[in-house]
Amino acid sequence: MKKDTQKLWGGRFTAPTDELVEEFTASINFDKRLYAEDIAGSMAHARMLGRQNIIPAADVEPIINGLQKIKAEIERGEFNFSVANEDIHMNIESRLSEIIGPEIAGRLHTGRSRNDQVALDLRLYLRAQLAQVEELIADLIRVLLDKAEAEITVIMPGFTHLQQAQPVLFAHHLLAYVEMFKRDSDRLSDCRKRLNLSPLGSGALAGSSFALDRQSVAEELGFSGITANSLDAVSDRDGVAEALFDFSLLMIHLSRFCEELVLWSSVQFNFITLSDSFCTGSSIMPQKKNPDVPELIRGKSGRVVGSLVNLLMTLKSLPLAYNKDMQEDKEPFFDALDTVVGSLRIMAPMIKEMRVNKEVMGRQAGAGFSTATEIADYLVRKGLPFRAAHEVVGKVVAFCEANELDLTELTLGQWLEFSQLFAEDLFTLLAPQDAVDAKDLYGGTATAQVLEQIRRLRSAFN
Ligand code: ARG
Image 1 (spheres, helix red, strand yellow):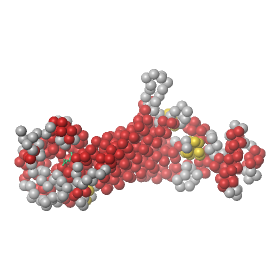
Image 2 (cartoon, helix red, strand yellow; image 1 turned 60 degrees about the horizontal axis):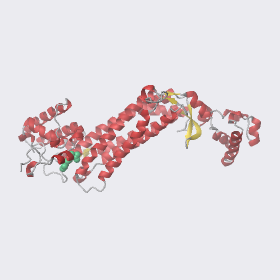
Image 3 (cartoon, rainbow, N blue to C red; image 1 turned 45 degrees about the horizontal axis):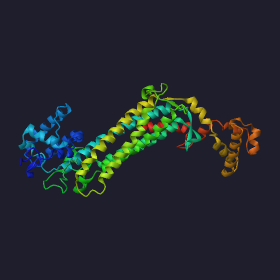
Image 4 (cartoon, protein in one colour; image 1 turned 30 degrees about the vertical axis):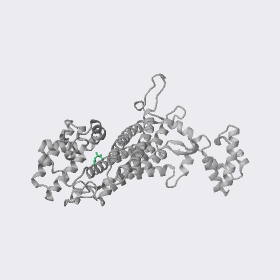
């Protein structure tokens, strides 16, 4: 039987790898995304090996130059990724061997395993990509703040149970999402801090018998420290899991927003008009303008949650330390990342271009007895216990419903039949704008409060 001389690990093998196995176990088709991180890690490792006299100092430069050349080849699209070389780590190493010869290239992997190598690559990749997502969230937040400020005079019905509740500023509603997205961004940045430790030097699982200078490698790669337990360092995928949770919650927030955009753009609501460039038509119904973009973001949120569950299930019950199962961490993460990036990129311009139908929202804000709570509060200020006030106003609403009247259509005489506490000043409470501006405490929907929140958020996202 022919010895599998092609493989970097072929020494103990007498039979070549079955082609199906090669195909099945390879990760190169997706982990090639880690090429830049893999090369950066190898460069830092090689330099340290030279500094520590673990490899001849003269070998460092050819290794670095070779790796640089490989990076350029990959970026020019000239690199020949091969399934026979299984993953990004071995694809790069075997190409290095072609370029600078096996004698020197063969020294690069001293004191290192693919287990700590892949853990390193992932940490570097996560660190960069999460920062990029935070930037995209900030872009979306800035668009929302602009919109909130531009539409500060728009009043809309606020809902609970999707039933008319109390009038709120449209800007206040938008800022509710800004708060969610801000937390999403904070979570990603926390996650980045936690994962910013170098696992190099953990070896396959036990550490290394070479005098590796772990700290200097960590510093060169911009880590804030080094991992403390070699077994943990090669088994840990917490950063990926956390990132996937953070992505999931971000997508859940987007899905709630998108659901509202879908509702609001319906003929029945008509609160907003999405730009034609963010909608599509129907192949059969000529009148249709479908909100495909928010629908798709809503749909894709399920996919991201699926990726989270996928990874958690992969990790569940895995014994220490590295297991090949862990190679399955990458595809769900990459897919979720692409989905999140794509959703955020399209969300910002869609919000920017959407038109707000002020008249419709304003009219609806006053419908459905939305200022009833204001009237109950009015009676409370005149001395009635809140429960009694609630009862009185409930009766007024029932009367109006039975007689197809709005609260604004009742005369003072009619009000007085329900309570002697009503007086002329009652009529300054019935407009939605009055109800809004009465909510003048921190976190409330009064215009002054909302403007204050816009100012605060702008300084956080300038
Ligand atoms: N491609 C592998 C992964 O992504 C790299 C680590 C492989 N290590 C091993 N001993 N097979 O997990």
